[in-house]
Image: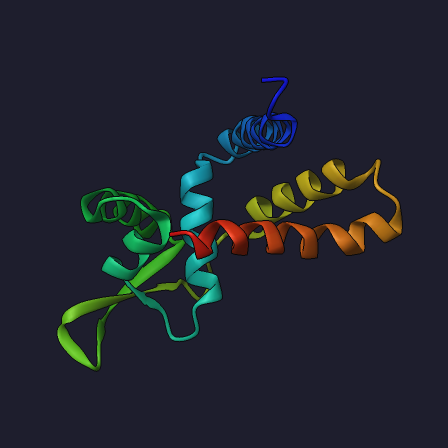
Length: 140
């Protein structure tokens, strides 16, 4: 892919990050997809409907439902009736969710990925990546 050096590096970074995080999370009996799902729920104030989660994660609703059943059994999330629509359920992080080890693994990964960057590069990189994401989302 000599003609696409940026794409090649982004794919390699994604694969390296995902692979290492998957290995760390496996020791916690958690998958990268489950951690990402929990992250989306954590960002949403008041919880998210299962359909909203599926759309955010670009997966089918049954996939989200299966992951939520596992996370609910592990005490990570809860599903409550949506006061705005009694037929719908809101997903929220459980009050005593055991997230510390998963979040610590994510913190270690981010620190490891950034160790070779200068302080200036660490400040600039999120903005550069945000601009790249926005440029690709504009075409969607």
